[in-house]
Length: 88
Image (cartoon, rainbow, N blue to C red):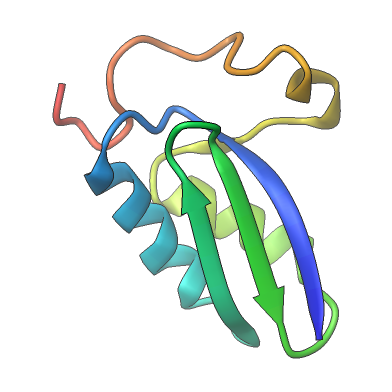
C-alpha cells in the first residue's frame, strides 16, 4: 500500500471536492481518496505505488490543477478567480 499527498488549486465548494474525489477514485489501484476543501489537500492511497501522472491527469479531468512543489508554500497563489466547477 502506498499513500501520496497533493495540493489541488481551484476548489471552492463541496461540488469541487466531489468532482476531484470521483475522478481520482477512478484511477486504477486507488483504494481511498481524501480531499480537504479548506487546505486543498488531496491524499490518495493505492494498492501499489501511486501513479503520479494518473492522479494529476484525474485532477485535471475534474477541472483543477495540482500545485507544483514550488507553489505549495505559497498556498493558492496563481489561482484563477471563480470556481473550477463553474458554480460561481
